[in-house]
Amino acid sequence: MKPVPRISEAEWEVMKVVWKTAPCQARDISQALAARFKWTPATVKTFLNRLLAKGALRFEKRGRAYFYSPAHTEEELRATEADSFLRRVFDGAFSPMISHFVQSRRLTPKEWEALEQIVRERKKTPP
Image 1: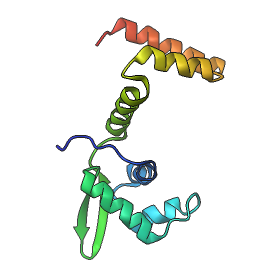
Image 2 (image 1 turned 45 degrees about the vertical axis):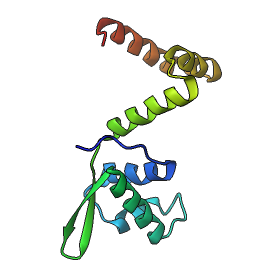
Image 3 (image 1 turned 60 degrees about the vertical axis):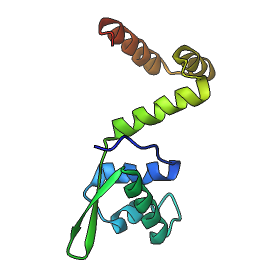
Image 4 (image 1 turned 90 degrees about the horizontal axis):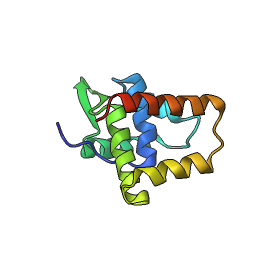
């Protein structure tokens, strides 16, 4: 399998549709994104071609139709993007990143509990 690629913000939007509806055609993706974006079908096809070139998507030709499926899970792409963000913005330092988000955001009691639960569970099972 190819390495997990980095993708643009717009490509993320396309991938979200593909993850939910695969296998799907370009027109299905265009229709799913039409309410939020004013992308033409040609624009969506451009994103699909970029994602194919990056190895994020695969396709199957059935007759004259192309059906797209993800080549990587959402979690794989999310991990790649998160690692890149951590390196670029926080020089790879995890604690300053967490500190920034905890101090700069207003967390609900439910979010605090979820964060605390993640830390408790992680302490039990180190990497």
